[in-house]
Image (cartoon, rainbow, N blue to C red; front, side, top):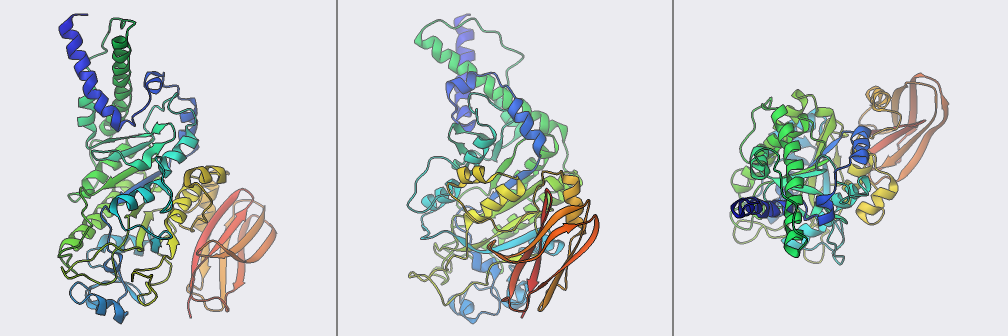
Length: 521
C-alpha cells in the first residue's frame, strides 16, 4: 500500500472512530466479529413492536400541562402563569389540557393516548444531570449505574452482544450524542445520527476497499481496529439508508422541531429497520423554564405544542404507512416543577409530574392516578409521588414487548408492579389476541354499583376474570372456570370501591387482555 493511500484510508478510519462512539464504544472483538444473525433473526420474528421515547429535557412543568382547573390553590400559587379554566381544553371534571395540547387531546379522545399522573421516584433528585441519569438507568437516588434500562433489556435479547452483532441496530437516537439509556453491560447497544443519508455518507466507502494485510506490530493492531470500525459503521449505515430509501416520502406533513425527528423514525420503521427503541428530543435544556415561562401562550406553550403536534403527526403517519399497530411510546422528563411560581415569572425544579403513553394499542382515554394535591406536599413544598416511573417502564417491557419476569428484573434491577397501560402480547398469536381484545366491552362506564364485561372467546378455554386497581393489586375474581367458544358476560359488584380507574383482566388459556372501566361516586 502506498503511503498516500494509507494516510487517506486511515484518516477515514480515524473519523469513523468518532462514529464508533455513536455506535456504542464497542470492544475491538465486537467490531471485528462476523455479524451472525441467528438470535437476532429469531428476535425480529417473535414480534416487530417498536417503542418511541420522547424526552422532554429540562424538567417539564406538569401543573401547566394537565391543569387542576377547579383547584383554588393552583391559582393562588401561580398568579401570573396559571392557565385559566376558560382557556383550557376539556379533559374531565377537575382537569383540563393546556390549550397548546390539541394534538394530545385528539389522541386521548380517540383512545390512543392516556395520562399517568404524579410520576417520579422516592426522594427525587432535583439536579438535571443526576435526575436524567436516574430516569435513564432506572435507579434510585442513592444508586449509581453506568448501564441503562433499555440497554440492559436489549442485552437479554442479544446475550452474545457485542461478540455477535445484530444486523440492524436495536436502538436508535435521533440526535448528536448517544443516551446512557442505551448502554448495555456489553457496551452501548444503539447508535445515534441526525439524518440517515448524512450518516451513510460519512461512513460509506466508494466500493469495497481492498487492504494489504496489516503488519504484526502495535501499529498494525491499531490499523486492524480502525478497519473493523469501518466495517461495523458500514454495516449499520447501509441498513439505515436502505430503510430510509425504501420509504422516501412520509404520508403527512410534520411540524418543525421535534416533528422532523419523528418523521425520520416513521420512515425507518416503515422501511423495515428492525430497531426496537427510538429516542427523540428537542435540542437543549428547553423545558428548564425558570424565567418568563408563560401561561396559555409563551415559551412553555410553544414547547408543548411542538411535542403534541409532532407526536400526533407521527402516529397519523404511522397509521397511513400501515405500521400504526406496531408503534407505541411515552414522554418523560427528569422532574416536574415547583408548585409555586418564582419571582421571574417561571418555575423552579420540582418533583412529580404527568407523562403520556401513546399508540393504537395503548389502553387509551384514561387518566391514571389522582389529581394533584397542592396541600399535602413534601418538606420542600413539592408534589408527592403517585407512581414510580419504573412502573411505566415495567408496563412497556411486559405488556408491550412481552418480556419475561426475569428479563424485567434484569432491566429494572428489581420488581416493579406494571401499570395496566398497553394491550398485551399473547403467545397464542396476535390474531386471536386481537379478536379477544376487539370483542371486550365494559358497561355501564362509568359504573357505580355493578360493572359488566362482555367478550367473545375464539375457542373454549379455562378462563379467569380478575379485577384490579391502577397499581395492579387484585381486588376481586368475578369468574374462574371453563367457558365455551363465543359470547360471554361477567358481572362484578363495585358498590364499595372508591372512585377511580379499575381494570378487568381476562386470562383465557394462553390469551390475556385487559379492559379499563371507571367507578364514579
